[in-house]
Amino acid sequence: MWKSIASSSDGTNLAAGVNGGSIYMSTNAGATWTERLDDQSRFWMSIAFSWDDTTLAAVASTDFIWTSTDAGSTWTAQTAAGSRRWQSIASSSDGTNLAAVESAFGIGSIWTYA
Image (spheres, rainbow, N blue to C red):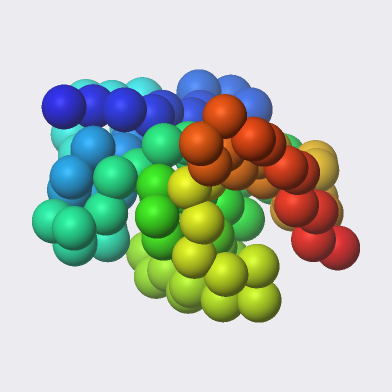
């Protein structure tokens, strides 16, 4: 089941996450899709683009925050914030600042990274 989607500023680049699956990328406004991060154990909740369309961030429930600096070709787990029940993520326009929201048992918190 598709759970999250994000668009570049001009709508050409798209990133979509599958609940219990992969992150897929499109560079042609959704005409074709390429699987980029394949792991059937992740439940992708939210994806965010920077304004320059090269930096992305994604969160998975009961997992880490993941980032890409090459338009989604490769992804790196950001382990400093820990594995949490991430719900949503937002990025600053240049991709250098992230804010993520987690929720566990009705209690939420906000994590920021600069």
